[in-house]
Image 1 (cartoon, rainbow, N blue to C red):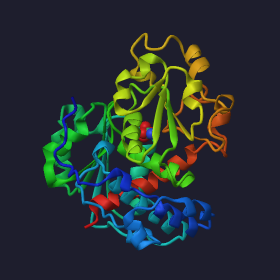
Image 2: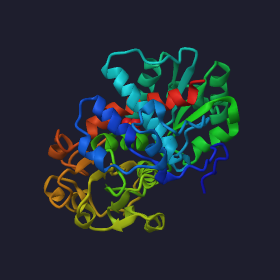
Image 3: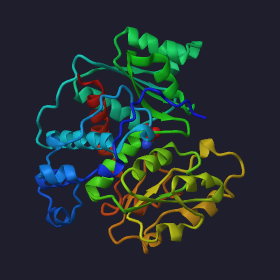
Image 4: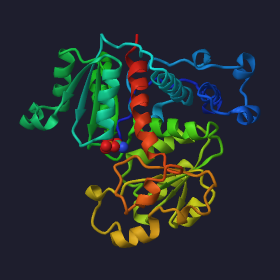
Length: 367
Ligand code: CP
């Protein structure tokens, strides 16, 4: 069991109260044609009273949570606050305007596991918001002398850290840190073991919303090593709040049967999972976490589960492919599909990752 956190405040937000209005506004401001979708867009009572809704006039407000540990604990309207803030930062960047400043704040990144995207984008996000950055290199820090998670964090807090961005191989480590530190600092989970990777799910959500502003009823298929994937778990819990129909496919040994209890549809064959899919999320085959015998061979995995253009023939005609990275090119996805500028959203995911992390830092730290 993961230590359940008592820190997040669960409010009474109704997940179905999410509406994509701000994305239409956002796309319209970018000169994108949204008229048809606007006409058919479902409306909530809130929206009917206040249309046209702009990001700034959203009826739902950020609830001033202290930490971001998991999408499971994030209400749909809170996720939408992050989406709105991200969209606003994207507009600000496109118009080359100044971002709001967090110059009085200090952010520390503490990565006990390797990372390219998450760590670099948090660093960039911190710098773009004008905050101070402590980039702890765990391999050359006093962690190598046996310093504990708590003492490392307390040391950084004593130096003035307002937020600790932590990645760790132990599931539940971010919740544990938040519980130990209480209100002293904001803890952001940058990936804990097999458990959660909330900012990845949030950037995936933002990227999907850019492509399709109404996600209610969309079919999202997650393919590959679901068992070891914190990205899959965080995506499933977040996307379900937005009315998405989630399918998973992969070798039966890598797709936990219990997922069906979450309302996820499980497939052992890729073709049925991809049938009519609007989005496909390819996951990395996590060779470093594999126990012997979970897959028969890489060759067989490629034959049965590797995504390529031909396998998408029965997907939606507007299907888009995502991958959290890093990719094992040729194993879970072909080069041609990975680099297909029309279908692949992988580069957009990386670019949006910086903006989503700016939004998370801003919402957690801005007073
Ligand atoms: N998606 C992701 O977490 O990538 P990194 O391991 O490079 O941060």
